Length: 499
Image (cartoon, rainbow, N blue to C red; front, side):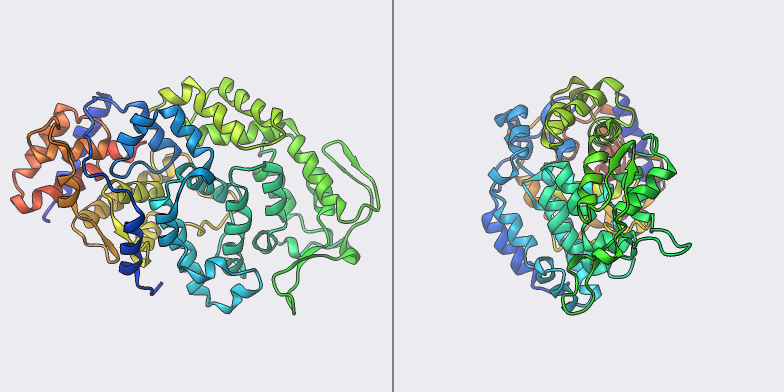
C-alpha cells in the first residue's frame, strides 16, 4: 500500500474540518475464541452527522466498538448498557477468557511466580492486559483497570516488581476495580509489588539519625488519596511513615509473603492530619491511617476530579466534581456510585469526541474497530513502546499522564501503525476488511465502499469535506488497495484519535 505522508495530512486536515463541523499456539486459541463470539451477519453503518449517545458511551466507558456493538447498544438503550457495564459479573465473557487466560504466569502466587523467567512474566502480563482491553465485553471494567493501574502506578522496571506486578494486577487492581476504594487502598498498601516499588519493605522504626522511610507515605498522601494540594504537611508524611513501619516481604522460605514484624514497628503515639493515633497499637496503625486519609474531604474531591477528567473532560466543572465526591462519601467509599453519578450527568452525555486518545486506547480501539485477530504479542508491544505508553513501564509513581499535551508527539507513529495494521503488516495480528465490508447492510447510505468504511470506523457519517479528501487520495490507489488505504486513512485521522 503506497500511501505518502501528504495523503494522511490531507485527510487529517479534512477530518479536522469535519469535527468542527509469548510462544503459544495463538491462531488455535483465536479460532477457539471465535467459536464463543457472537459475530453479527450485518452491521448497520451510522447515518447521523455526529456521534449519537450509543457511540459516545462505547467510546468513553471502554475502548470503542467492535462490529455489532453500536447496533446492540442502540437497541438495548444507553442507560441499560451503563447498568450492564456496572455489573460485570453478569456479562458472559467466555470468548475473552479463552484468549486471555492461557498465560500460566498470570495465575501464579507471589511465591510461585519466581519459577518463571522475568521476560516471560512481563510479556504474559502485557498480552493479558491488551487482549482483555480488545476482546472483553466488560469494557468499563477494563477501562477502570487501566485507570487504577495508573493511579497506583508500579513500574516493572524496579527489582522484583517485574514478577510481583502480575500478582498486584490480579489481587489488587482487578479484585477491587469496581468495589470499595478503602479495600482497594489497603490491598495496594500491602501489595508485594508496592512494598518493593516504594520501598515500604525497608521501612523500619527510626534508629539513631535514620528515620522511617517516607517514600510510600508521601505517595499515599500525594497520589493515592488527598492529592498534591490536599492540605497535608511534611510532618503528616513523617507521621504516616511511622504508622507504616514493620511491614515487609519474606524473602526466604515463604518468598513473597507480606509480614508484619513487631520489632521493626514504631510503637509510639502518632498524629496524622490532626487525628491522634495512640501508642502501642502495632499493626492496627495501618488501618487507622487508611481510615484517616480516606475520610479526609480532599480524598473525595481528588478521586472525583480524576474520574471526571478520565470520563468527561480535561477541565470538568466543579459542580460535577462535587456531585461525584458526594456519591463517594455517601456510599462509604464505593466506586460504582461515583461512576453512576458521573454517567448520569448532562456534562458526561454532552462531552462527545472531546478527548485525545492515549496510545494504548488508540491501538485497542483500532484493533476493536477492524475486528482484528491479534495475539497481543511483541509487535504490538513495540508499537506502544515507540509511542511511550506500554503498560507497566512508566517509571515514576504518578502514572501515565491523562492530559493531551504529552501525547501530541505520537502522531507519526499512529499514522504508521494504522498503515501497518490495515495492510496486515503486523506480525501476530490479522484483519479481514473484505469480511468486515460484507457485513455492511444492504440499506447503507453510500453506494461506494469508502463512505461505508469511514462511517463505520468513525461512528458517524463523514462530512463532505472528509469524503472528498478520501476520494482524492484513493484515486491514486489501485482497486485492490482502496479498502485498506481508506481504513488506514480514517484510523490515522484526527477524528479517530478523539473519543
